[in-house]
Length: 269
Image 1 (cartoon, rainbow, N blue to C red):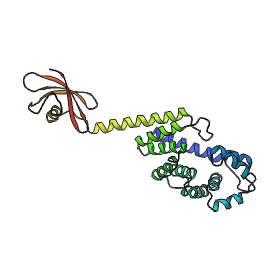
Image 2: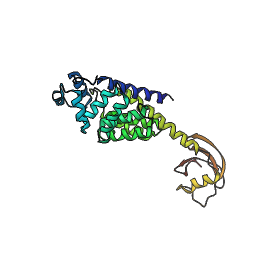
Image 3: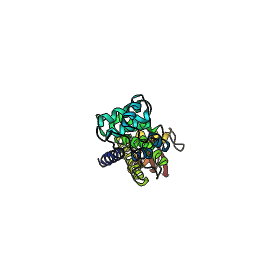
Image 4: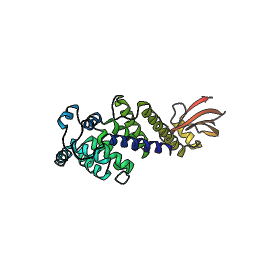
């Protein structure tokens, strides 16, 4: 389907560009430009740049091994440019300690099947953890993953939240607000399609018994009246204009179904 293709392109494009910005040889010292890129991505703060300047990758790895999620995130991004499995190792370790960055990239990996078997359920689980911490990209990606799982109502809720929290000057946000709104519109269209499909499975012209039920649910016609059906025509989802009689003469009413019950209003006597 078209929306699946859009989703795949968006997720893969964003992931690759983010990773490319922190490509490192993992030898010698981490450069100032690499640190500035990490600061733009929110992995480290601007204050961290000076503290980490000229730190060797060996020293950085030692800190990551000791459980520092900030350094695990840096290694995850750096290794992912060369070795997806090694990158995911560090992302997973960070994610399991509650890192929203690690959780986001684990979710993206499962969504795309990059380094792990594709699994939209696991993708949604990891992305939800990050999204609940306020990560805007994860909120958007979770919406996309839920859309691909046909969970359109939840997808719309997360996309709306991402759009609300979107920041135009955020370096990592590669989709502009217009792109996000187009994705949201697609989900709304799919929700409407699902609604109509659900209605169609239980949409039928009211029988005489159902017309009687509609009468019984009305304040205008009670159970003492026995409806006789004289034909109906459909005017919209769950709406029918029907001719009926409850004694002498034929009347017209509009009949519709809601939550399993039939209702109607009299159009003329």
